[in-house]
Length: 447
Image (cartoon, rainbow, N blue to C red):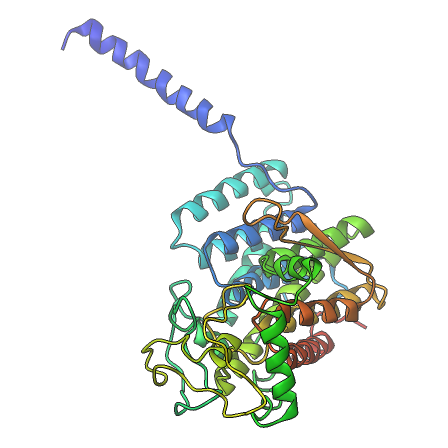
């Protein structure tokens, strides 16, 4: 090689490396707004949703970092009982550094199979550390607390029944084919995450602790009224819905992980909530949410009740291994089946009873009223606006009282054609029962 050429390469190589570093550093991660807990709650939300997880499954994944962050903050600031094993914080430990470490280590553990998500987490972590002097000014005490909290939660939840990969299906006990028994619904995807109904709860004693009563008999007046109501108001075509009822139904097609974690952050902003209370609220939202949805899925796969599209249109089935083709009518002369009936929203690929959306919404209404210490919750909920782009959260609905929110979701899922009225009511009851139990047994002030 020509010596001059070699000399040029020796000079150019470090220059290229330096330029590459400049390029990398010119576009650092931008942490979300808010205090450190708010930031990492939003990062967790983006990571969980970005993984493609199904929403009840996603609340389980949100619960892990939320619990770790809560325990890390409580270890330093005190005031509330920890969720996991108590942690003794060294004197002077930085609570911000503890939050960063607890959230980062927990999320990185559970999403290690997603290189893009891990790269995002690494970038946020590097920026967060730079904001706190590398988290060395306290001698690494805060980092140690965060690491301990993350490790404790990971150990505590090992073998808790969570299945991988994301969105994987699983086997479940079935019922003999008959009217009212659940079938796959258009577009006939595999049963969605039955295993969620068997995960070890976070606070509940068991997932059948608040098992609702069975759905009504197909010969009952309650069934006839529910059948005819959803047939009329939940149809995609020829519905009796008003335009406002349609907008309400579409509003709740938004991702509930994003909806309710956003409410938590906005409550913190509006009321000047600090790290400790924000960590507590995020843990309440996500651990109660996980228990509520796991309880719902336990009930869904216990009762295996059919969806409206199957009950109203017996021809809306395929050879799915769960019954004959066409399917059954209900055998009740007071109901009239309708070939070709379809719901406003695509039916989720899991059993109908009780409604999951009413369950989580009711549980969150209880979380927010408990946290605020009043039934005058006065909160805004963001959801899907059909006039906007796909996946938007541009629509806003305001709720003064928890029961206003509960009534809204019962009607919304009926107008969407997804849940009978009695299923929405049952979900609302389960959600409130789960939340009440969890909030009496966790996140409590230290006397």
